[in-house]
Length: 112
Length: 109
Image (cartoon, rainbow over the protein chains, first blue to last red):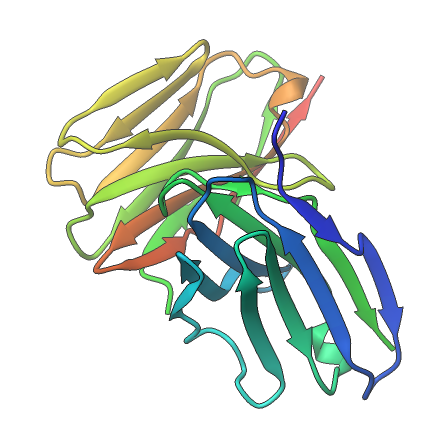
């Protein structure tokens, strides 16, 4: 079965370090989303791409976060420098349109 | 910011009891989707509703879209322990997507 692949599954880092999370969307899907999930905030939209073009990154802290799609098979989310408040589960999701999404297993990030 | 309100936040039921979660929006929606997330897992797409007044069923799950397309509900008949998880609605409106805050369902055997 086709699935969205996220790496790494777990990341523990120290405050100030750069963190890069990667996502391989399902082949043929033209929309890619990055979400952050915490107990307090639920599922927060960080970035949304359609055909590799960023359409909405209004939920992303621009000073430290960046999201890119260098090609159709790879989406990246970077945090530099990381802070303890960035600790969360980061999900990537892809879909043939924006509605039905297939989620990856997530990256559990802990910033000490 | 988020525009869809989802209630209740938590629901604890005895196995066999029914369960309902509601999503309400201040604006007319283009469509709405429902997702389920098991503890420790990722959200999984359940269904999409598009038409006014639409009702769809998946076994013990019934999904409804309001006539005014401003609200939606998910009803589970005779809950089972496998229904445990958090149920999210997600709306699409004005080229934006918003997840509801989710309803966490716990089912006691």
